Image 1 (cartoon, rainbow, N blue to C red):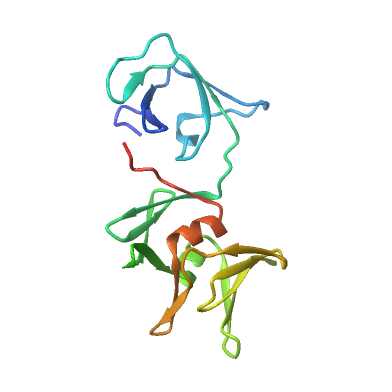
Image 2: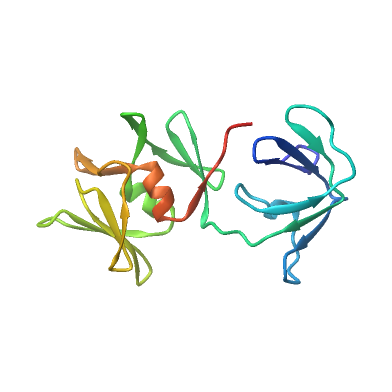
Length: 185
């Protein structure tokens, strides 16, 4: 978002689209009304514009933008180990381990509106949203189970430290269908 109420979209790292109230926004295959504030990291768009400013990255002011359905549950960003969800500071701070940001599973899941259950005898963890179990995993294991028979390999095994279970942020992003904000621009 810009101070003037417009939005700058950074597209694939090599193009910036400058949108304003004058930009015509339409939703793909629906009659839904789309507004500038509906655009989030990971939103797919198709833009029409007359010219591109030859700069790095290229820049354009599209007259029309078609917005496709958002395929993520939200978006995540990090700032010096702090985790932000949908642009809001969660108060969660991860720790870097072997080049991966490890985050507390319970804090992250609860920030996403989920509940976490732990079975002490088996070290099994279940993450639920309402009545639905999103995934389960065993602390120290290298995979998570989705839908009782679909397995997702973890980038690094989850670990428990001082009573807190940590998982790589990359894996939490995959398990919760989040979009990682691209800071390439």
